[in-house]
Amino acid sequence: MEIGIGLAVAVALATNLAALLKHRGCQDAGAVRIGQPFSALRDLSRSPWFVAGWGLAALAWLAHVAALSLAPISLVQGILAGGAVTLAVLSQRLFGDPVGRRQWLALAVGAAGLVLLVVTLPRFHGSDSHFSPAAILGFEGVLVLLAAAIALGHRSGRLPERRGVMRSVLAGLLFALAGIAIKALTGGAGGPAGVAALVAVTVACGALAQYTAVAALQGGQAIETIGLMGLVANAAQIVGGIVVFGDPLSPSPLGVALQGLAFAMVCLSALLLPKPLPGRGAVRT
Image (cartoon, rainbow, N blue to C red; front, side, top):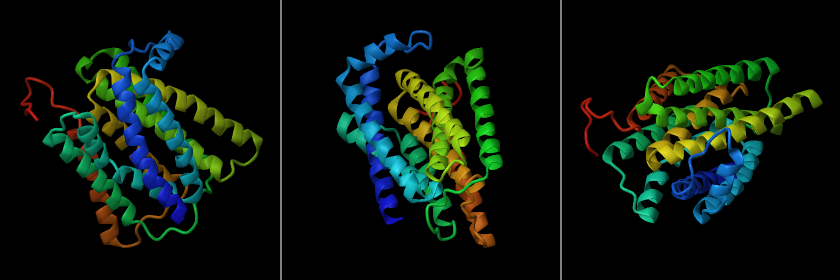
């Protein structure tokens, strides 16, 4: 358990730094298009910033898998969420990017909400990797439906000014789908068929998440894009830990009330991260 927690802390820092490197690198590459994946990959591979970010992200992913095999998914993702504030620090200190008060507040509120959710859970014992096929099928199915709805809304063009936000949310949902499948694989998937299905989900959703993440990074600011992706991915996986893997809720009324407050803080953070639309009372930050 202690090793898993230590790995999660390292993953939180490495993931944020990798995302910032990839954001810097993909700005000079051609726009990614689903019909021309190899052209986009060739352009991205020419950027030292993106290659460095991708390499660091790959190492962070391996450490993430190891952390999931040693500790409950709710605890791991809560630690990753708690490291969200380091995103603003790294962006400002290493790359000189301006971080507005609104973004600082959003990251702090979201991270505090997810950490509050985790600390109000009862004491964990073991990695809590056991699950029922019905639970994971139902939960992953709900995430797939949400992802499909976001994708269809993005393609409709009704909210062109919010396409970057929708891409970020979609990428977060896809990362969550892959993360829950990986957690299930670490606890045994119930035979070759289960293993094959979870591997397929991991590979397909992981690839789509990477594509969507690059598209979001190319069209949005680093803090709001990376922060929103991480917030959605972490929140969905914490809920998945409770629903799918049986991570326990607080046994006391006060604990349940605090957990409700935590989810409200996460929702508030998601609303604060994107910049206000111009002409609708936007406040310059």
